[in-house]
Length: 378
Image 1 (cartoon, helix red, strand yellow):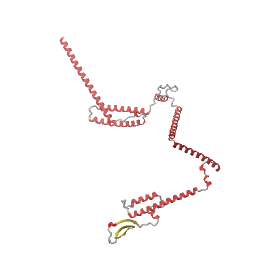
Image 2 (spheres, rainbow, N blue to C red):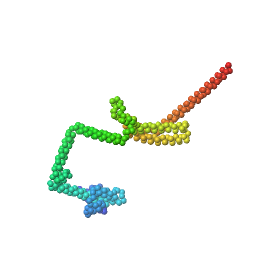
Image 3 (cartoon, rainbow, N blue to C red):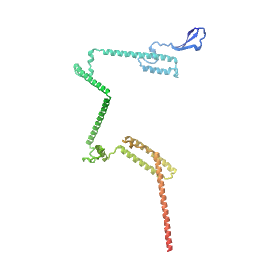
């Protein structure tokens, strides 16, 4: 039994579909399951590279990114699976072939340009020997011989600096402890420089204020300073400066803000309790509407106060001095409880007064009765 290969060819537009299969010589018909494979060929061949550029809507000398972007845009239009009304498989095959050819051409041109630049650099480096030293890297002035001597000295200095830097890096790499000490010294020097800069700035500000007469109205001007506390844990200079500021009415911003927040919340609480007491108990429907309006205004005031607390927490220097937000609902419930307690206390006082009044009245009646009985008996 012998086999032979059969190739079937079908042309659709500009494409060639080729099928290959194996079949017996005696078989007159080739069964479908014997088909070995097929591939798609294209017989469309543009004449030159310019046709490919025109097909991609590009010009010669474009970059790789331009080629890729153009191919991507055309593929969106003509790809069979794009779903576009301009989709065409034949056109897309031509575009794909043009993309590959143009991409290869652009890459070859870029490589040739790089080779030309390398050749130019080689020719530039092979220059007359005496012309290499005419510029002296812009170092020096005067005649060429003077500039040459100055440039030689500059090269010696630069070489010595490079040698010292190399030795320094080598020593640091060999001794980790030495590098750590060096880094510590650098940080310490930076800290000292910053401290000195701050001290100079403060001193300049003090001198400027003295020249403007800002210290003339201080109490105790021209008098000796009072002695400090004998406590060894207090810095005398810091203690004295703080005392001078306090004596002249200065307070830090966070202290003033804390005082303002406390005064504001106390005032809001008192106003809320007073408004609740005015409505009486029990609250009628009309007064309920007024109470809701008072609660809404109180909630808005608490929101503004909480924003103020956020600002305070950002500037307070001590963590345990920070404040928490106030809850409007809890404050309202607290006010109602206080009002209820006050009302009950008032009622209890009134009941006590009435009881005492009745007891006094009964006592008076008994006293009068006994007096009348004494008069009768006499």
